Image 1 (cartoon, rainbow, N blue to C red):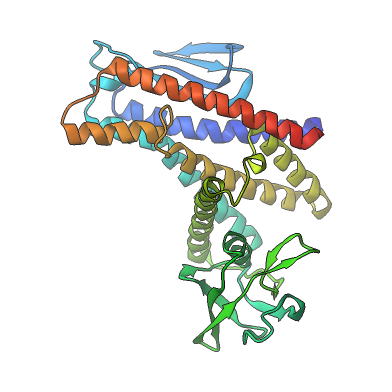
Image 2: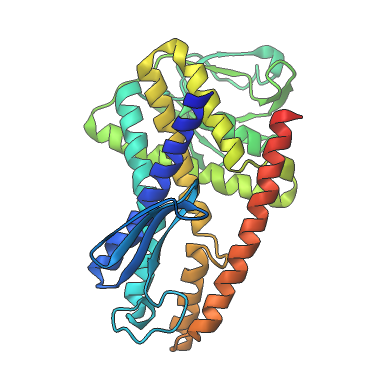
Length: 346
């Protein structure tokens, strides 16, 4: 149990540091004064100062910050964040999510280079789940579902989950020719989810260097797609609020992934944790770009407003907007963490 928690904390810390380093490096390039750089939340338990920046470690590894001079308040310092041109402030804020985007692509590419690509090549069709008359045969490769480009077998399961109440127009390739059919999802009691009854070729295909990069980017696209669709499903009620997971739930998922991978050897443990880290990094990128005060997306929205108006918002007013957003986000985090604890222990 201790090992699982340590691994989860290391992954959280790595993702947060990478995000904040994005802000930090671009701020330095723009000659913005960085007062503090810290990892975690809560009271400071360890700190040191190097140059003009104080580096801090805090006990709760669920956040971090790159605290810049004049970021949320007025400052006379010419190197203050709010005294810099709009385009520099925009790049500094965007750099955090972009760092997570870049990290996710790197991790996805490493996993694919090592493990290979699970191409959506049909192995057989389970007639009990319907679609026996779909025309799909062993060796066919599914390439499109309702206009969504398919690159991996696991993408099909995700697409079916979000479109379980629809007939899905599916394009597949056989002997270099494209064909179209319609697949209807059916609920599998055994699997506990909707399926289209297709079993995939279990063999992973190894690619060359450029294919690994391409499919790494495709995997990142898939993670962004599932993140947006999950948010949409939450809003529409397709997924209930109780199914949301916060830090505690993610720690459990990381621990379960580690435990289930142990029997397959150290390589599978590392690759599965890399894969999960890529998903979390992509999720962090998307969530931070939501136009919510206190998040990077909220700041970017205010920059767009500033660009349209042709003048800045009052720094103190902007700071209060982000403070309210931060308080609301902390409240949401507490509720989600409570929900995680209830799911685990009750």
